[in-house]
Length: 336
Ligand SMILES: NC(=O)c1ccc[n+]([C@@H]2O[C@H](COP(=O)([O-])OP(=O)(O)OC[C@H]3O[C@@H](n4cnc5c(N)ncnc54)[C@H](OP(=O)(O)O)[C@@H]3O)[C@@H](O)[C@H]2O)c1
Image 1 (cartoon, rainbow, N blue to C red):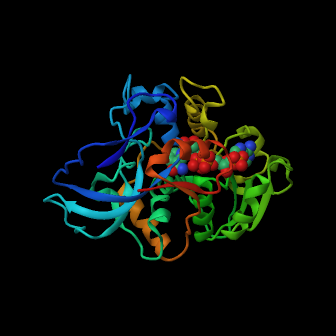
Image 2: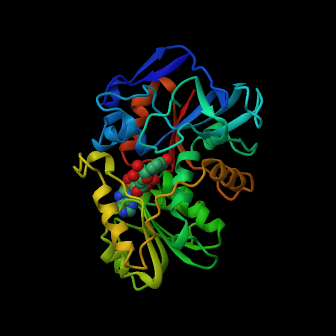
Image 3: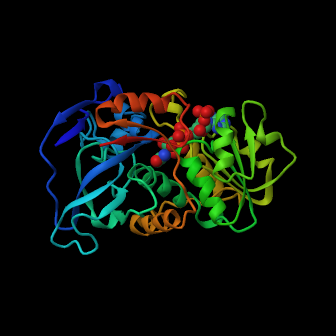
């Protein structure tokens, strides 16, 4: 099969499309003929090997353990292991390829990938392979962070900072699906798209600093993390909650050793004393349950994935460079 191979950490330009053997499946795995796979900032992190801590967290010390990047995909079931019960050859499926953290290569940038059965769901008929492939990893991040104190309730006022990217476009639509009034913050060129996917209000961050508003929000879902918690607190209601997703802006912040981790850790410790910070919850929600929620939201038309542009499998380096450009609305997807 054709697969994108990463022999070392560094520039995406070193990725090569090569012919290799198809993966073998274990008893609880499904062999998927990949039709589409998404590109997101964590793919860039593992390709570049930055921040260095990710190499110690399982990605591979000197070179990637799994040489094929990509963590989410959609395609057809080609074959199933002997313990697989829920899928049969020919089914259209989508899902994540990694059981654990996204800071790892997952093998999705290939014609075939072996995926544990409980990481997949049937692809709803009303979305394309490209749209379905853009959802699993991003949707998991969103749902994992909208738990506990940060659970969205009907009628709440939610502000999403960085709403025009992969995580933001899904967070916006999921908050709307749960009945919130959503204010979306991003750059000028993304505001029309944000209105089209349901934003009740939009703020252009190149013209206005949302932390200086007189308005107050019940939840701030902050993706770029370009304001301090103290500044965001000014526009939170007394019971409001701040959630930081964090974005290393493709290494531009220079935190090459630990990335955003020190800031996240600080907020987790502070959350023990401050009710306006999301709970420090290290538990990982079940990927099977998360896929079922995402599938239902897609099928009911409550989320419509925004795919900015697609690139063929042979152009993964170009696709990663395009993501880094900052002009992407929603997601970039690889077609296979
Ligand atoms: N997407 C995934 O599947 C996924 C999975 C796991 C983890 N994550 C993590 O989640 C984080 C976000 O990922 P993402 O996919 O949403 O990234 P993204 O697609 O790059 O989106 C980030 C958004 O933030 C906006 N932005 C940048 N500076 C801003 C500012 N000062 N004020 C307001 N908005 C600003 C960007 O718009 P402009 O460029 O126009 O400024 C862009 O629309 C990353 O750290 C990533 O590692 C993502």
